[in-house]
Structure formats: structure tokens, C-alpha cells
Image (cartoon, rainbow, N blue to C red; front, side):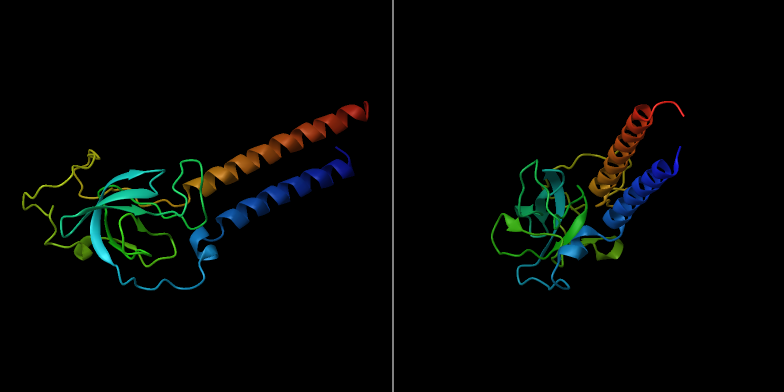
Length: 186
């Protein structure tokens, strides 16, 4: 490997590492939001009973017993993603702060919506063990009331970094082999 090839390989490695660092450095939503989230005049509390569109569209059972839909993305199509998408966890409780006051409610990662845990979960909810009619949620098999795994909003970013590194490594290897072959034997 000559000096030029070493420089090229080092540049490729540094570029791949920088790409991964930039993508994973900060949560995507913070980079796209204009300021800190404000409480919404349309706030409500509810439990996610189903999700769609990569967990970005949620069916919610509110503490008043209504079933509503919340769009956690401005573009709910299956093949589109935005930097302000919010994802939801089935069976988890949330305090929603939607942008608008009509069903389907619009929400995103820049609103004050937050997942409730422990003592923050309302005791007077329709499905707090009172036997009220509630849409069933899929059982996680753990017997836990909420999804035991923490939310992971960076799955897509991790997949992107892995794909970027794989493409850069494969392209760099192909380029080095091609250059080595065109120079003839050393």
C-alpha cells in the first residue's frame, strides 16, 4: 500500500466516522424545533391502544373514555419520514399536547407531549382495573402494564449509520482494489 492509498483509506475512514458522529450526535427533534415546547390548550391524557405507520400514528383511549387518533408526523405515509416525527408505544400512557383541537389530532416531536410513568399515570382512568370497556392492546407477554423496553427514537438513525458505513467501506475497498490492479505488480 503506497502513501496515496493510505491517505485515501484514512480519508474514507475519517469521513465514515464523521458521518456517524454527526447523525448520532443529537436527537433529531431538537435540531428541527424552533424553541422549547409550549403546553397546548387542547391537552389530554390517554393510553395508546394501537399504532400504525412505524408507530407514528396512534389510536388513543382518553381518560374520559373517548377513542381518538393522534398523528405524530406531518406526513403519515408509510414510506416518508420527517425530522420531527414522534413515535408512540402501545399500552403506554401519554399526556398529549396536540397542535390542533380536532380528531385526528396533530402532534410531533416539537410539542410538549410526554410519556407518563409510575405515579403520573392517572388512577381514575377507564382501564385502571374498574372493568370499564377498553380496546384491548397486544399483550407483551411480561404482564407489565406498559412496554418494558424504553422508547428508541434512534432506530432509524442507527440503521442509517450502519448502512452508510457499509456502503463507504464497500466502495472504498472496491476503489482500492481497482487502483491496486491498474498499477500492476509492485
